[in-house]
Structure formats: C-alpha cells, structure tokens
Amino acid sequence: QVQLVESGGGMVQAGGSLRLSCVGSGRTFSRYAMGWFRQAPGKEREFVGGLDWTSSSPYYSESVKGRFTISRDTAKNMLYLQMNSLKPEDTALYYCAAGPNTRTMRSPPYEVHYWGQGTQVTVSS
Image 1 (cartoon, rainbow, N blue to C red):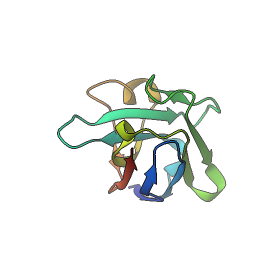
Image 2 (image 1 turned 135 degrees about the vertical axis):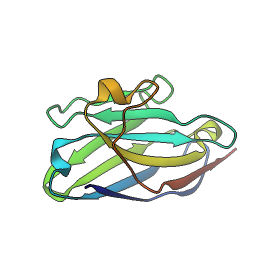
Image 3 (image 1 turned 90 degrees about the vertical axis):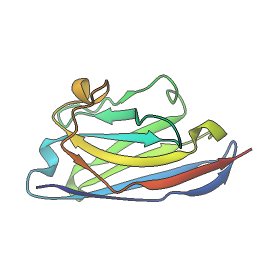
C-alpha cells in the first residue's frame, strides 16, 4: 500500500510561481512511476507530467512543457512540481499519483494505482 499527501497549493497571480510537494509512504513507493494530474472545475482530470522510477527524464504534457518541472527525491520519498509562469488556465486541483510507468499513466484511461487527496492551485489574472 502507498499513501500520497500533497502540499504547497495556494493562490498566485498570473506569471507567478508555486512549488507543490508530494510525500509518499509505503515499502514499495520508490518502485513506482510518479506523476502529477490536475482537474479544473467542469473538466476532465488530465495528466500534467510524470517520472519513471528508473529514469531521470520527466515527461510533460504540451500545456505545461517549458514552464513546469518535476523532480523526485527517492531517499526522502518526495515528488515535486515546480510551476513557473503560471496562467489562469492552470487553476485546478492538483493530484499526486503513483502508477506502473509514465507511458500508461499519461494517456486515458490513466493507469494509476494510488492517488493523493489533491491540493488547490488558483491563478488570478
């Protein structure tokens, strides 16, 4: 079993930055691919980016590429999402997720084994 807890959400003006954190627990946490998803009101949940446990090269959705950076500290069971140049359309509930690999996590039906509870990000114009 893996538990995921996100933190770091908040309100920021357009152009600003936020850093989300996700702490994982569980004996097999380090063997999972980790990712971030988001869901805006009235919209489907979407993949933001992810990182396989065997790789140091994250995969990003086109909507955040060049603005968001994912990193992982396996020793601390931490996953981070650095969000720069935020836009109002980035407003959403952001979820940390664990799955078998980013290839099956990044496209519907999103193969995710564990979800965090979510942290709200609100970007004002």
